[in-house]
Amino acid sequence: MYNNKNIYCVWYPSGGFGHFINTVLTHYGTDFVRPINPGYQFSATGNSHLNELVAPKFSFNPNDYEFDFGETTKQYSVLVDNGINDESKNFITTFPQAKIIKVCYSTITWPVVASTAIHKAMKSNFDSELAVDQLGWSGSSNWAQREKYFLFLAAHHHRMMWKPETDYYNLLVDDMLNYNVFYSRLSEFGIELTDFSKLWDSWYKHNQKYIFPVVFAKKVMDAIDQNQSIDISHCQDLWTQAVVNYFIWDRFNYTVPANDFANWFTNTDQIIALLAQQHASA
Image (cartoon, rainbow, N blue to C red; front, side, top):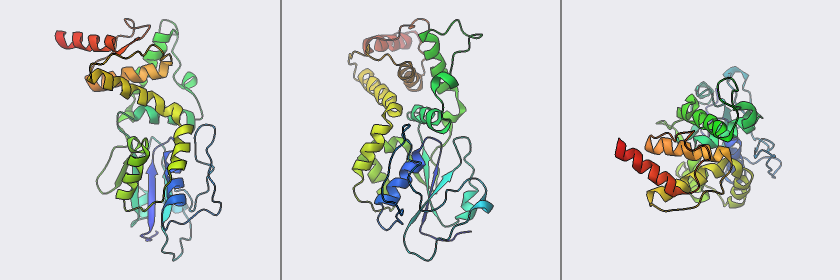
């Protein structure tokens, strides 16, 4: 049991978010213990796992954790790695007085977490993990693959995991997608920081492939809200198309008919008309 009140436990799901937050705290947090090696880097998948930890990562068993935090008044960042499947809190018995940052996600940023979990944590890809079942589908055409992605996003039980709780510092993945919001949220937790915008820029660049589909889908939703016509014919990526369909389902409780829109949409006018028709017939 460690009664050091200067410990921040970063408790997070899969996807590389915890390691990035740890890098921010240990490199730019005022009065945080610094790594011996001051540099940082990102892997090809956007992970920060190669960056040095100032204290060992906690993984499941409290009896396995050993580290001498000493008598320093400096702040420590400790990663709590449960994986996306497990929100157990047994780490609290090891760090009873720690400040706990719980990394959460909304239904909006669930596609970001889903994508990073597959590519980073599982070291896999959509083709391997979400391939169309030839026995259950009529071929592997684009519409079938898009529908497979959509159903995964809409039906997977992980979509509703890792929600904010009282008594913790809740940090949404949503907050991390904007530097100023991210900085402000950490400041609200009592963490003093120097400017880490260059680190954030690098993280965003290396993780853009996971973030872009959600950014694009939000742009489409804004156009729908404003009854604005924008061309989306350039969007040919099936995962991004599925994320837009998921946003429509999540926001309007409407499932885009897979066969009727096998070629998907070319502009937001089609989506606006489709939702209007659905509303009129409801």
